[in-house]
Image 1: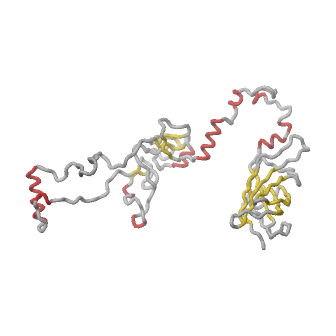
Image 2: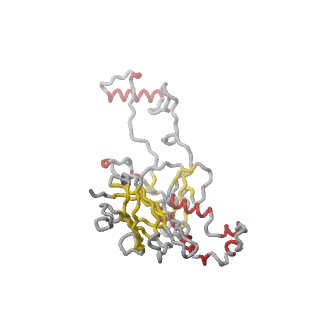
Length: 350
């Protein structure tokens, strides 16, 4: 019975074991979990695995012909050291490389066309610093005073020299935040100020040149005065957010008045992201109780005229201020219909 391998998870130690002397071999630790077609770990035992390195995710010829490892599988896990049988001579780990793994699926202790390689190939991240460290000429005898302030390893590196370098904690944190949160993301912020890398959603006008990533995300959906060099931030002051729904009521749309939306600012969007909609109260009717006036219902038209005349004689209005029904608190009257709410600042990622 042939064993099918449907999933393989690779954990590569991207830090190559480079030696400082030429006679020290260059090694690459490798760990993986072999799973069957149902995601379960492959049974314990010995399996033959072939490893090759390519410079493309698909196709091409291997730039490292590779090695065959007869490795023990324990709980689905395999652990080998690549480079122990065939040196990585001529392999540039400073570029993007891809590791291809082929497992002896049919158990005949040979790698053949019956054993297809795993897909996709596993990316190996460039190891620039390790590559430079491998060349002892980069370390021994080089004048590092411009960076470290001197070549005496017993002396601490001056803080000013560290601050001058391109990698600082602030820049690193900013880059991580950019990767985790895309430009154009909007979040409610409970603080008073605006964090670095974020902008207040107050409709401000920005230039495309100064904020290219944010413009690429927003385009002119929230307005553009000239449609060319400037664009507007969302103006979310005093409004609630609502998901875009351009479907009709027959299609199950939840915004039956979506055609009543309007452009936030000149150049902005009409019905999609960036459009606004006024507050409203759903159409309804009020039942009118006339029993206290002694009016019977058979002749409604005449009774209504009597009722209206009586109101006019009394100087009453047809609609009066709301009063408590005796069971609940007095109605809260305001200039808009709204739920309970709390103020926050909406901010957008630059």
